[in-house]
Image 1: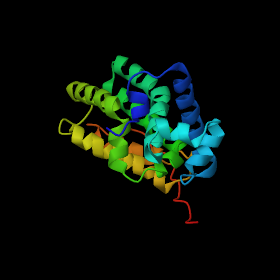
Image 2 (image 1 turned 30 degrees about the vertical axis):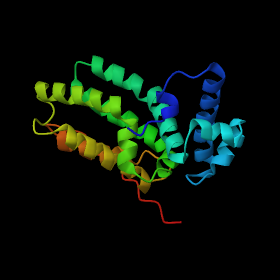
Image 3 (image 1 turned 30 degrees about the horizontal axis):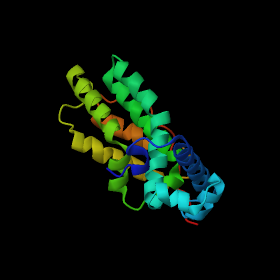
Image 4 (image 1 turned 60 degrees about the vertical axis):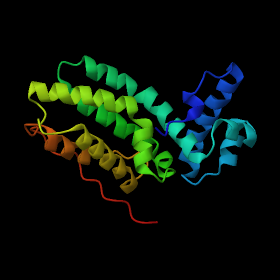
Length: 206
């Protein structure tokens, strides 16, 4: 997993934990304001810590990005997962989880853009998420609402494809809703009786 060792290793002292929190908060702010190429020195300055403190907790930009994305998923997607697992309709819960993941990905598009290796990114931030999706997939297949021939490998690749959609839209846009609806049409046993979300053009190249 590519998840930040600064977050995953042994518990930090209170002051060190505060520094990690400040750095992650500053990273999300700086990536949103300045884009994926923002220097780590700018993030350290925004966090009110020295560069040495930043590098003591995060070896490089990718590790910091993964920690920031993981934090955001814990805050925004985990509560949706909890509700989805308690929902009697597993397929509906599954698509709510996927929707929340895409919403978080769109909100932090510049963070995603700062990581070159998509496969490492996805495996680094979606470990527990994929376990929950596996539970929902099996339940939905048992309920007859999801295709029985869909595997978790398929789901992993579909999520990777959907997260890649963020590269084709403006940060914060909900243009991902249309491709997500197409994925839903593809893996449900019966296509939902609803129109696709509105078409959103690909932004012009800058």
